[in-house]
Amino acid sequence: MTDLKEENTVFASKRAEDYLQIRYELEMRARTCFIQKGGKPSNKYPHYMTLGPCDWLKGWYNEGNALKIPLDAFNPNTLSFTYGDLFPTMRFKDDRPYRGNVYTLSEIQIIIEQYGWPQEWNHDGTQGPERYIEAQVWDHDVIQNFLRS
Image (tube, rainbow, N blue to C red):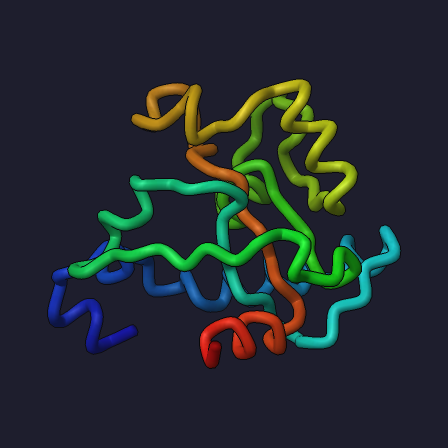
């Protein structure tokens, strides 16, 4: 993180000093919620992806790109979702009912039916912090296998 801050060329270089500690706490909270809903994470920490494309995220990186893996390649018991990025979703306080929640695949499908895709209705961030649906992948095997093929 220190090197990123010194280079100051990507989005992560602007993060607060306590970002990693807060991120760790939120990940543990998400993992606990997911297990309570029947999730079976095999990793202690998730890999982060989005459900559907989000061009805004590509701008976080000097050479942003996308990796597309079919949803059915994953075991649903190893996927959790937040309606928006985990960090603001779990910390932002307002009256939106999807705040502070971690969803299973079947649950996030219902949330999408109710509220739509934030990538579409909030692509510019003017409607709140949710800019995409985040997928937390709690098993690295599918990603590793996909990258090898």
